[in-house]
Length: 220
Image 1 (cartoon, rainbow, N blue to C red):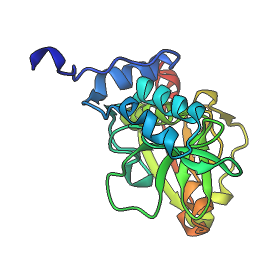
Image 2 (cartoon, helix red, strand yellow):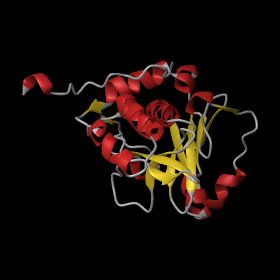
Image 3 (cartoon, rainbow, N blue to C red):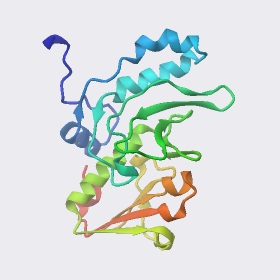
């Protein structure tokens, strides 16, 4: 029915930077997501705490059904942000699905017990302290890639030799394992998640966006 259709234009969640707001509103689309509320009673019957179901529902309300352009790492990140049945235990904590992978992967994307966005690989590896941080990172990568005069990708041990003297962390990406750094005319994205989560140091990756002016460095 026409009245039940979902607008393809996503409602941009509050609290994002202007750069991320533009990214979600212009480059993102919204598709119908699963109605996880209808599973609430069944999940409670399987021993999942109501508070964890509340978290899953809150994620779905904020991000559910939003599809964003691929990330530069992690084989593009989740295809569509969507929640699902919490997984875990009272002893270990509870994790919430954040969306299905674009390709076959050795890990999945999850929201951790403290709300961090990360990957569930050989071990839980938080990438950003929230999904907002993940989206801010996507927005910054898209912006920097558009305006940089040069983009250099560094992998493996060479990443550890990067000199970050004179660089400051970019706070809005809320980096944990992954971080962004802003210098006088360049931005550096450090992707450590696969190296840590898969015990694979060869998966360390850095992207250096050079030749940026003030707009290129910040973009709102």
